[in-house]
Image (cartoon, rainbow, N blue to C red; front, side, top):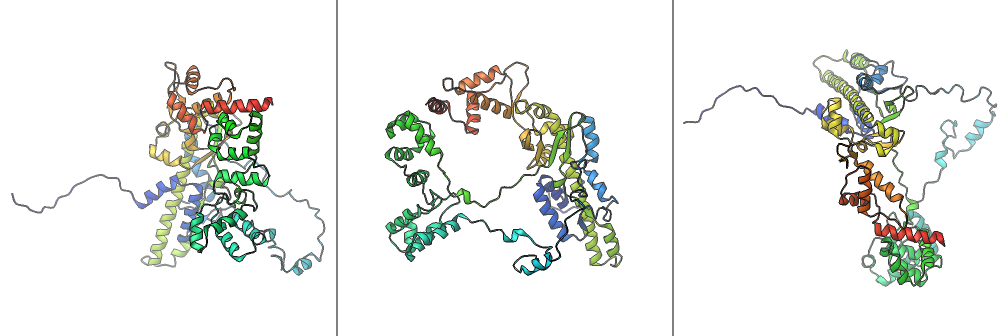
Length: 512
């Protein structure tokens, strides 16, 4: 049979991931910080996009003729009817019922301002607002925070007079980590500087006397020993205790008493002194600012019963397409010109972005409302009543795909009367009931039960993992011993042997 070429038609169906569809999926799983960064980039590329504000809401319009006031409610319009069917109460957004006006903040009878005040301010040439006073900012005169290495550098000239010693000290100072520990090898530093390693060791010993106490230590034991030495408390018994911190971590107090040669009362006093020391002397100079998590959804009790679920307006971006500007500029451009094509692409991309943000808000609202409905008992009574929940249950309830629910719940936070939780927190593994036909339990609720059982222990009745399994079975939870051990270790709870040693030591200390 000979080979031949032929031409024929075939009709098939396939899912094509367009660039806009891929960006819509990415928008869904972005945090509000990442979303604001993405919108800022789009604003730079698209001249038709604007961020709505109270002053510009009436002037700018959406691609479909909606005003900025409409986009504020568009995110919740479709979800509202669906939530009403589920029995969830939705109230007004945060802040609408609050008195936000500034009419009565300052009284009308202000004290008369001195006529020479602007002149006096103008004479102060070093101020930021020396010309008129409107731009005066006290932040310009706040001293910058001193870091750990800078703090040490200021002390080195007072401690060391020899220029060579100062050079070695600066090299050691550069090797400090944020906790104040020396991470470099002294032999490498000596080889790099071309000097004897013993000389570097001598400089290091002098640097260990600087502030804060415990700095330039290479191990935790050396850090504690430096602080005890400065307090004149590093006797032979304390040296033995510092050398065997591994036994202290295991709560092996019997072995520590033998090694230190002390009785129970002295050992308890020594442990009290150890607790007063700082294991990270350089941590007080850390300049990193903790990131504040802003909730994406706010849940609070409604006045008419149930729960009020709403999007946080501070994390909800409002992007508008300026249709009037497009019409004004497009009139001056020929239909077939590159400028008109550019404006058309900007209009299309802007309309797509506003629709995607609107759909993102609706999807987040649907998922959050269903989570609130499923976890109503948790909001009412606490973590003991947290229900087991998976993505499939929520996806079937709101008629969406599991992957969509997974993207929505990634890095999104919900503020509830019980605290702030990531949406992933409400999805936990189901643990079977010990009673036939009983309700299953959430893994998070079981971990909380284990924690409460251990917290109620007494020195004479410390629960082993088998005892915890028995107590949980009496409470209707069927759990294996190895699972109890896994949950206990995940919560950083020591074993029953270590807990018994610690509780007995605390009891003896209280009796003394």
